[in-house]
Image (cartoon, rainbow, N blue to C red; front, top):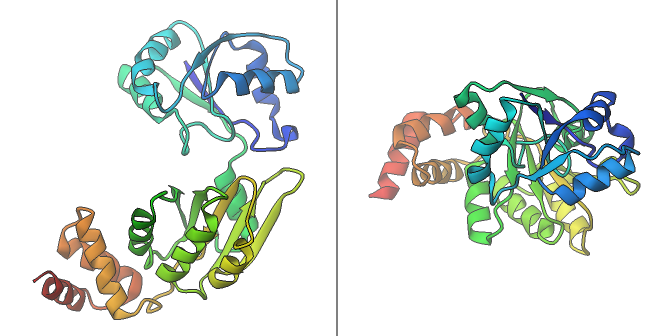
Length: 272
């Protein structure tokens, strides 16, 4: 079978007993970076040296069939560099191929940067959405964030330290500077830090520069927090991304409380 295994996101003490046992016995490991896997084995004091196969974003489509066939005969342990495979990491394509081929897939659960950041953020955890990495290009980033301005659930994002100040500024512009948020830095590591405040406050915090691996958590919108013109903009952004106008108006209406009919008519007028 294929075994998806979560690895520590920073602190090696978070390696589960099941993970260690799997690493000690796995005949084959498909890893995002085989060098990282070799370092992990060494750090955990594991002398076992399995067959290592590289499985990353650039070769997953081509390599998945080979690994699936291999998994018919023996267990294949799948690792990303940190956290759970398939979550903003390689593995989804492999799992989909295995399911289609009737090959069993199971999981060794463990650390997740998404859930760790959500838990420590101080923001609502009952409903949330994971948005992955924020787009790199400023125009794409602003467009993506505008479509989320009316999202009522807590939002979790990944971002790079070199871009986070610009990202927070774009979030403040799209969501409002008074929207509560948290930037979680170096989670579970020696210099772990969680900066909490409004987006405007976090922009000021990030401007001098930020280092380390980051997760940004942002509170969801409250009903009527989004002004009507901004809600219309949300409708238009959804339409540009491929959503039918009627469906877009209904979706934004459910998040903002604005009339679906009025949003539809206003968006229709803007489109001409």
